[in-house]
Image (cartoon, rainbow, N blue to C red; front, side):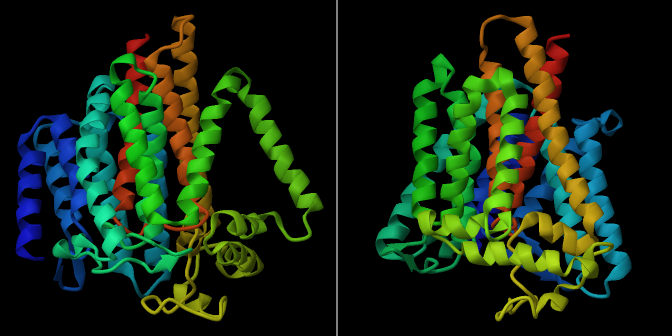
Amino acid sequence: MNTTGICILTVLIAVVLSGSRKWALLGMMAGVLYLTQGEKIEIFGLQLFAIRFLEIAGFARIIIRREFQFSNLNEIDRAFLWLYCYTTVIFLLRSTEGQLFQIGVAVDSILCYFTFRALITNYEDFKWFLRAFIILLVPYLVLLTIESMTNHNLFAIVGGAPEGFGFRNGRPRCLGSFRNPVLLGTLGTSFLSLYIGLAFSKTDRIRAFVGIGLCLGIIWFSNSGGPVTAAAVVMVGWAVWFLRMKMRLVINSIVGLIVLLSVFMKAPVWYLPAKLTSIVGGHGWHRSYLMDIAFRNLDKWWLAGIPIVETKDWFPYVIEVTGGADITNQFLAFGLRAGLIAIALFILLLIRSFSSLGKELATVRSKSAQISETEFMLWGLGVMVCGHITTWLGITYFDQMYVIWFMQLAAITSLSKICQDSFR
């Protein structure tokens, strides 16, 4: 960890510990943008990234100030804990390697999620955060512009990769503070839906359009097919707004389309990403073949997962760090760690998130005949999850992107409960 990284981290820890909740939230997210996983300290084989110090500071804050009551867990909170506790326990029971890493994943998840649950307390403060986050995104996009023009990553100052991720179609694939351009692009897609929702607020419309432009700019500089596909899903999700009162019909239509594709396609339906590659670019064949070969080897991992090195024969190439296949699928990553039950628990967490948002949308609509800003934001949160699901079919969140996901999941949990309480 260098001097620049230490200075940035020190300032952000001070903000997280001493600022108001909304400033602490902004400080946490500033760490995601402007610190990298190159900024770290290694102690007894455990890598303490800069973002982990922020997690610890945030969790210490909410414990000391008693800003969250762990006795009031709801169904999303419990599904979250079941997922990470079960996955960790099963992994530790069957594995002789990688225990520290898996424990670190569980600790990161719990610290992040519940810190954000405590910091996001009301709808207005969350809107304030989205407005303030734009101020952080503007210089971030400037740095990406410089990286794109020079192929030199200025985040190398704080431990980032000194150069981009190569070129595609003559354009560089920027990294910013991330280790993969897909994760950089996912930063843009994950907030795109929220800024579209904010655009329906008359007082925030101009700032929301600036936010939308910044998100699209980040996607553009990432030059990756996955974020483009996820952004398209976000746009479709908002187009479905006009059918919001007929969501059962929409869901049934999607299921029917998948069934039809599985009947008429020569290859299994999970080869759709490979076909999309010709349109948006990327390595769709790898994603599709990964699902195919994982299904063919289901008997080896369905119960409790398998060591990643046992996947080394799945592809002609392996990942040097792990010695196994490149597992570019978040659902499958849970399965290989702890079996099909882990995948089921992940899906349960997503179902409960959608269910909670659906209930709150119904509650908001029942109290007023007019469409409210709250309804738009709740819908935006749901569309945001659809974007994440699309991304998870092509990559796992191995970088600080997981912090963004846990913040947004916590926003779903907290804002849904706030809406429920306010309309009682």
